[in-house]
Each structure stands twice: as structure tokens, then as C-alpha cells.
Image (cartoon, rainbow, N blue to C red; front, side, top):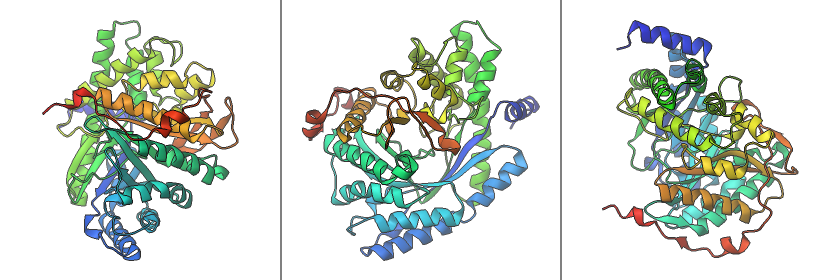
Length: 450
């Protein structure tokens, strides 16, 4: 139950501090759709998704109206497509069917055009990765991901090479939109099966027929809370963030349970990640600056982000027994007004972002780099992030946009929640021979936990 004080505090956070539920994501299993005929498979996928998610948007909008809680996105995640497309030669028919299904149901995005290749690739996995440029350039609502590494398996460097090439080709295929297709593609290490956030959401093979996962947000609420403890020790800062995260997560728990009840679908998890937007007052970077940093990216930023991430998790797990997904703080450059400002003035570099990913929820996210950045360099950046993930036993990811025709210092505009990004320079020295080796980087010693 919510106390009257909690209700009043939550209303204030919604009204003044940009608190929202970032997404209700319905996970849908597609295993029942398997067929050795591409068109039949695509038809089954379309029918399965549209039938299961028929009322998702209507229910989300109704909860939003009745409870006064903004629900920014309604989304769908599905079984990784490479797991159901092994009997067909080309998964593009499924990609198109998923995009049509997303449009028919009225959701913002659909995720799960995915391959899990941390230890090796099947023919279906390779076909899906090679189809990514065409799939992402032809569709508008489809999101894709590839898991190339895990702490238990190591890093599949052959997959890393293919993914770097896929990112580069996807940027070229969507050059008329400044490489926008790359904003819908995430390369993971240690991907989780219940992530409600795009572009990396998929309905894991260990999940049931369907579920409801909710992702909350609230960077603005955290920043406002910290404004009231200016100059206080970090112990006070951590406690303040924990209390705020608790209230934010309680809102997500309420929405998730209500959506689950109305849709007749099991409640999965609440992901309590702080997901920023390009709007003023909704920035993770500004939270770090409220702790005393002149600009996000300066010395101390990694420590500040570590405190934030840990306190958010501690506060959230007290508010819900079903916390999952990624849960922490996101640092997508183009989607965070503070990150945009810091990158534009040079305070936030690619190297500093990489260091910060050691302690945040995911990794190098929504970063624009010069259009002439090579596929090998992109693959090497992916490998670096995957190494951070497998050594530290955490999820890391890369969503990078080599924006065609741009150079360092330019700016690319994506619009909406995807925002805008300053083009950040990459190192001028090549990694071609490193990536050409292929094979697998072995799992670290800390993987032997049995």
C-alpha cells in the first residue's frame, strides 16, 4: 500500500521533476511460430505478436490517464529471431513481419531481431548478422541486438568483426538519415533476458510465453533531491539517492502490476534504470554535476557515477521483489542534454566514457563518431567494451553511429528521444591486424564459479 505522504511526494515528482515510467514492454515468445517456410514463419510471427499485444497500448494509455503517471513508451520484445529462423535461409521476412506487427499494435518499438553468439555462430546467427543493414534500413520500428560475449564464454571475435562490419554498412544504408539505423542496433556482452529498454530488448529463451516488464526513469527527481543536500558528505548523498530510487521504483511496481492484471499477462520485472532524455531537467550528467563536478567527464566523474549506480540499485531493491533488467544509470550521449553539452565542449571523450562504463548500467551508448571510422575500429571498440563486461561480470554494450559525411566536431540530429550528438573523435591508429586474428578470447578465470 502507498501512504498519503508517498502519494503526495510522487505527484510532486511527476508534476515538477519529470518522473515517468519510461516503458511498458510486453515480452512475447515466438517458439510456437517455427516453420521451415519463410513466408509461413513471417505470417505466424505477425499473427502471434498482434494477437498477444492487441490491447497493450490501450491498457498503457488507460493506466496513464487513471493514475496520472506518464508512460512514455509502449514496446514489445520477442524471442531472439535467430533461434526461430534456423530452418530458413534469410530472416528478412521475419524482420518485415515484426515491423508491420509493431505498426499494427501501435507500439513505439519492437526488439528481438537478435542473435546470441557469445560462444559461436550457427548458420542462422550469421545470416541474421549479415542481414542487419538491410533489415534496419528497410524498417522503422524494428530494433536489433547481438550478444558477442559473456563472462562464462569469453568473446567471440569472429562475431565482433562481423558486427563492426554490420554497424558500418548499416550507417551507409541509412546515410540519408545520418546513419539512424545504427541507433536501433546494440552489441552486447552479458546481455540480460528481461531488458525492457530499446534497442537491446529481447524476450529471452528462459522466459515464459509472455510477460510484462516495466522500465522506470527519473533523473530529474534524483537531481532535485540532491539540490536539497548541497555540500553534504557523500554518505548523505547516497542515502538521498536511495530514498528517491525507492519512490521511483514503487511507481514502476504499481504500473507493472496493474498492466499485468489488465492484460492477463504475468508480471516480469521492474528495471529501475535512470534513463535520461534530451529534455532539460532529465539528465544523468546533471546529477553528477550536482555532486560537485564542474562538467561531466572531468576527474571524479567515474566515482560519482559509481555512487549513483550503486545507490539506485540499493534503493530500488527495497521497493520491489521483482527488480531485473539492467537497473542502474544509463549514459547515452545523444539522449542526455548534460552529456551532449559535456561532449560538445570536450569534457567528455570516448576514453572517459569507456572508463565510466565500468561502473554504469550498460556501456558506450548513442555515440556519434566520424563517418570515415573503419569497421575494424568499430569492432575494436566493441571488443574493448566486451572485455570490460566479461572481466567485471556485468552487462556492457555498444550503440555507436559512424555518421556518414561527418567529421569530429560536427553534430548529428536524430530527433525525439534519440536527441542529437556531437561527433566525437576516435583514435587515429588502426586495429585491423588485431581484429583480423578472429577466434575467441577465452573466458576469464572468474568465470569458474561452479
